[in-house]
Length: 243
Ligand code: NAD
Figure (tube, rainbow, N blue to C red):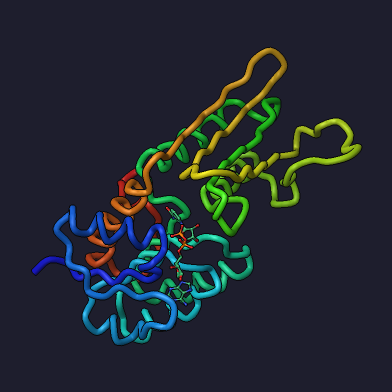
C-alpha cells in the first residue's frame, strides 16, 4: 500500500501544492487537516505528518506526533531561536525531518554558501537578500535564516553579528557584520541571494523558485525517507545525502 500522508495546513498555499504533488507521486492522502480539524483523528488514518501551517501550531502538532509515535516532516517557518531549541528536544522523540527549505536547488545553495564563506574569508562582506510574496507572515524567511546560520558558523560569529536592514547613521560596515534584507511583494515564490563583496570583486549566489511544487515534492520525498529512519531530527541535506 502506498504511503498515507496527513497534510497539516491543507487549505494553505503549500497544503494545496502538497495535495497535487502527492497525487503526482502516487502517494495517498490520509487526511487533510486545517484550522478546527481533529489532527489526532486524521493521524489514525495516516503514516506520516507533513506540516506546513503556522509557527505557533508546531508545539501541539509535535506533541500529537510523539503521543501517536508518528514520523513527521516540518516545513513551517517563523520560530524564534529559543522556541526552536525547545521544539527540537520534542521532535527528536520521533523520526523528524525539519527543514527551512525543501527544494533540491536551495539545499545545493546551502552547500555552496558554506564553501564560499570558508574560501573567501572575512575580507568578503557577506549579505543575504531575500524576496517573497506579499502574503508571507514572517521575516526573514526560514531559508535566509539557514543561510545566515551557515555564514555565522563558517566565520565563527554569533547572532549578534546580524544586521536586519540598515537605517540612519550606521557608521562604516564592520567585517564582523552579516547583513540580512527581506523584500516583500507580489507573487514571488522565493528568491535568495548570498553576496560576498570585497574591494574589487563581488560574488553572488542566487536561487529563484518559481513554483511551490519544488517544496512540496521535496517534502514528500522527505516523508518517504523519514518513515524508514529511527527517531531523531534530520534535515534535507540528510534526505539528499549531501552531508
Ligand atoms: P498559508 O498561510 O497559505 O497556509 C497556512 C495554512 O495553515 C492555512 O490554511 C491555515 O488555516 C493553516 N493553519 C493555521 N493554523 C492551523 C492549525 N492550528 N491547524 C491546522 N492548520 C492551521 O501559508 P503557506 O504559504 O502555505 O506556508 C505555510 C508555512 O510553510 C509557512 O510557515 C511558510 O513559511 C512555510 N513554507 C516553508 C517552505 C519550506 O520549504 N520549508 C516552503 C514554503 C512555505
